[in-house]
Structures are given as C-alpha cells and as structure tokens.
Image (tube, rainbow, N blue to C red; front, side, top):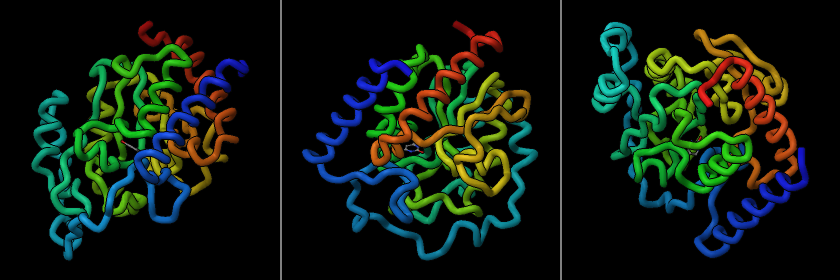
Length: 255
Ligand code: URA
C-alpha cells in the first residue's frame, strides 16, 4: 500500500472527524452496540411501530412476483409496495439501490441510515463519502458500479438488521443481483457477508477470499464506517480493494 494512499485515507478520516465535531456525533456500523450506520439522528423523533411487520407477512412468498420482474424498474415498483421490506420504524422511504444497471461490480452494505432514508439513496452519509474515496483510490467511479443494501428500509436507531428482517429482504436483493448480473460483488461489513453467504462467522475469517455466488465472485471487507472508528483496518481494506481491482480486470470488467 502506498503511503500516499494511507495519507489520503487519513485525510478523509480527519475530515469526517471534524464534521462530527461540528455537526454532532454519528455512530459507526458495527462498533456501537445496536447501531449500524453513520448518522447523527435524534432517535427520540423516530416512530417505532408497536407491531412487528413480520406479524402479518410471515407466510408471504414473493417468488412468483419477483420472477415476473424483468427489469430493475419493475423490481423497484414491487419493492415500493412490499411491506415485508419494512422494519419496525414507521414512515421510512425505500432505498432501492443506485448506480449503473449494467455494472460489473456491485457493492452491498447493510441498511440505510438517516441520510440514506431521507435521500432514498444508499451510502450518502459519512460512510458513503469515505466509500467514494476508497473506490476512487482503485479507479472506480461511484456512477459505474451499483450500490445496494441488505435492507431496503432503515431500522430504528440504526440498529443492526436482525436475522428475520434480513431473510425477508433477501429474495428481493437476490432478484436485483440476477437482473444486474455483476461479475463481482463486494460485501461491506460482516452483516452483508454473513447474510449473502449464509454462514455465521467473523468478518476476519470471511475477508481475503472469493466465493462463487449466483454467477459472480463475491468477497467481503470491513464496512467503510468501521474505518472511522478503527483506522487500523484501513490497511486490510486497502489490500482488499486492490485485490478487487485486480480481480475486476482479470474478469474483464468494463474499463
Ligand atoms: N451503511 C450502510 O450499510 N448502508 C448505507 O446505505 C449507509 C450506511
């Protein structure tokens, strides 16, 4: 890893730390109990549903409806009305996914935070800014890749998506992957990796490897928000994304 790149990521982290001092604290995925995203929301304003959405959607099987979606637009429309995708936080917006529909690289995070919910787009908060810089460092532009999350709605208090929510959302994400047909998938964070690979293990044991996944090769690295709290992970992330770039070129990803 070049010192320039380390310095560059240091600058980004410092910038975000300054922002935090100015605009208030934001929490970081995976490092604060029950809190996964990078927002500074005042949770007291959140309206939590008293009934879990799972109560009326337990036996819901979207397979046929999903098969009928032959474009991302159709899938988005289906998601707009799919209550199964909701968490127990009331009034959230759909955060479907963003980017190039023909992308050879797809990035999958965990769940939208406050900024993402507001703007209806994944990774637009502090973690998103860092993610953009990390992508640029290995010559990917945000608009050339496709970015989505395991959950398409924000969980209350930015808590971790629970296993039941992840399972309810998974068929929709799998259809999205089938429609995009990426050559490579990068999971951002443990929740994303363990959900797609369907195994319960540590991020450390998942990263650094490539797994065949629905016609693509899938790999896992630390969530960018994790780097804001744990700068020691920037080196493994840098190694992971450099390998990702090599793999992308090797697989004939679009320049
Ligand atoms: N963290 C995520 O995992 N996804 C987002 O969209 C934003 C923050």
